[in-house]
Length: 152
Image (cartoon, rainbow, N blue to C red; front, side):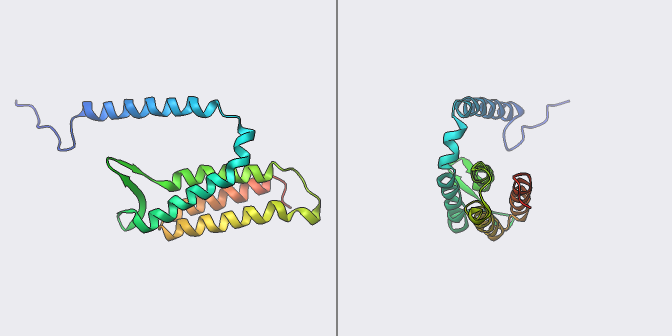
């Protein structure tokens, strides 16, 4: 019986090689991120979130549409989904705001207003990308974190 022809996308060994390379890149990134002091990361979290939201806006304009939604930026053979980076940046931003600690009631707006603003802007941009699932994750994360952070 003759061997089955190779699939058009490449053989199984090509897919395994891609997975091994992705694993090695991920482990390298993990080692790099483990060396960063998280307390310093909280100070730059608003800028990181701003950069990620800028990428989401760029994706709305120049994004690669797949099944009717523009969520991807194509950089040659590499396709990036900025909303995934935005989700992590949003989490760090909210954690940084909540890490300020309990403020007197008259100053609590310094915590809640930025969190509410970031939640609204981030979720609206994700809905504009037709990524309702990610928008719901962002709202759920924000709600869960502020409830655990002491909101009454």
